[in-house]
Length: 314
Image 1 (cartoon, one colour):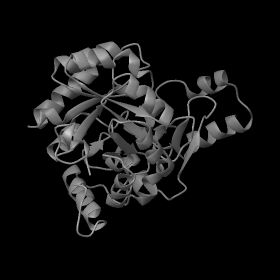
Image 2 (cartoon, one colour):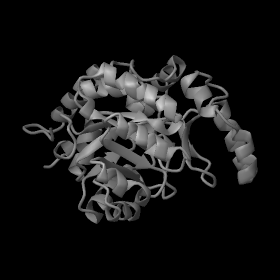
Image 3 (cartoon, rainbow, N blue to C red):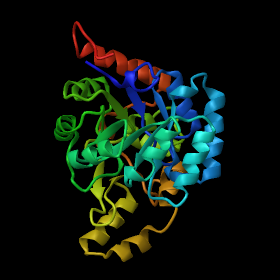
């Protein structure tokens, strides 16, 4: 069974997802030190803040080759974010929320690996045609912004695997070693975990946010704003207000006015669990502690091995 360790310079075929307001330099460095791909989430960062977090990560790890940057492609500062990352030695990029045609060939010309996030087999095929080295196939169990297709991870992974020749990395609803073993049985060559890494000591998430994850149940999240930008949210006061607007057939413009600016920062970084926008995945109901990244990665590896008596995917 192949895994992405032949594509990326990491010890284990696991990726710590790049999430807004959560995945800073400290978390990425801890992940790199644990032998997995540590990702800085640039979606919430202006170029100068991204440079600050890259500097922090580089100072905290002896494995800079295990660092990556996640860059959504829909922002006006995307090119500047990519240029800064390249200048500082980053050679693995995870792109999302836009066409991989825009930057993939240029990044590969700079010696970088490009992995694009997709939500359907059709988008995976387009990513392969654009020259991407791999895709992250993310089911709609995932936290944050999701594809409109609403394909679950269990259904998505084998369909994407059958559609492309490049490596497929599974994401969405993966929170322990059992899920890692399951998606690799479906043909994935690795797994990306987001929500599970929010609840670690090194993540930038506010302590209120981490505690809310620990206190979550299986019904604590729901996909919202399907007619605007689909996003899975934690059920708090903000969520209920969004739901009420949608139930009363609010227009896209009315939703945008209500959302305003800074809601995600207010919730995930500053800890306002009432008025903040809290993006988190369905797997939160399975999380009951806040370990260090080192402890978590060791646990995930052991859990995966226990699922496969007499063998292991890594």
